[in-house]
Image 1 (tube, rainbow, N blue to C red):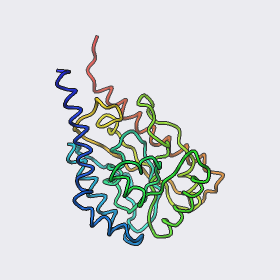
Image 2: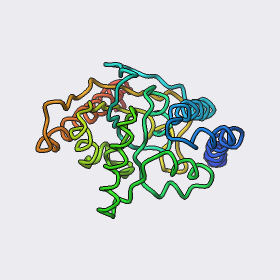
Image 3: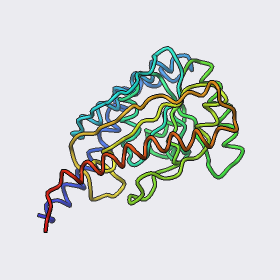
Length: 255
């Protein structure tokens, strides 16, 4: 059985990259036009949402979106979520209809084809450079003034698989407070199980995402950054722990 599983996992991983590349190749001319002017970004975002749905459906992921509160399409937000998988980008695009810009690590710009559009549409950050981190604030401010939202995975990267939720960096919360936009926490429950960074793992199934109640920043100052950080992290961590405890209770007892 194991001999059969490993080749299937290899093919499954290859199939993921085929799905990532195929829409980009087919839609390349349209994508080029959509990124040629910043004001056309909402159109590019619609194409990106199609790309994300194409990949999730093609991988056999049946996504379910649970909404405690619905973002107003005419307003800007700071969207944050736990980071466990390459599919986090796709699930975020599917779950959120508000056009947003990712803030992500610059290394992803090196991925062939995907990286070409990534570095032209996202806000890239070199976390080892204070100058780069400062530039993020300036570019995010420009995007927010254009009526867009921002999306950051505040763990700053994908933690080791045994870690349920890593500590959050402060950047997303400083930005939200500075620009008086609500923080919207999202919990991705199943991405690690479905398609983690462990090569021989994963498979088709449900991907659940929960959009939690928004955290308002109107009355906050920069001194409240750490408190807001901890509150947002606690919401996501409690959701993950509750789900794990619920799943443990469903397992049959073995004596």
